[in-house]
Image 1 (cartoon, helix red, strand yellow):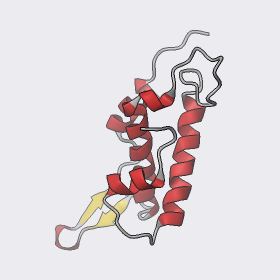
Image 2 (image 1 turned 60 degrees about the vertical axis):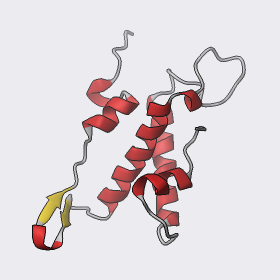
Image 3 (image 1 turned 90 degrees about the vertical axis):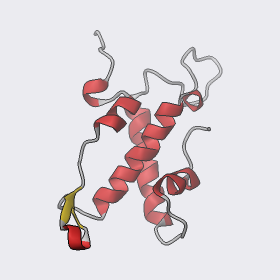
Image 4 (image 1 turned 90 degrees about the horizontal axis):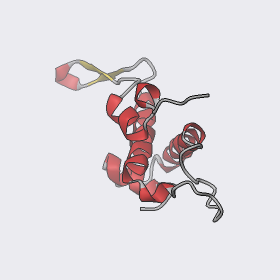
Length: 117
């Protein structure tokens, strides 16, 4: 896998086969990549500089999957701004604004490593 994740990887994870939402998916993916690069800047060499001692983000499959899943969650929230999705006969379901599994993959929120100073 390479950094940053691609639109095709996001669409594969969401099981989307058409290109109707490509523009919106690209915006959400770009935003999630920017977010991850901002909150994990001290942990990874996102710039690709050869003098950095930080690891390459492409080597961390959980970071890439977490970024893809974060984009997928933001895409789902966009379709339900009130946080609810109608599911025909089953009624309505809630789209969570926080997913602990994604937070664990990305090591953000309460799953972030402690920082001193």
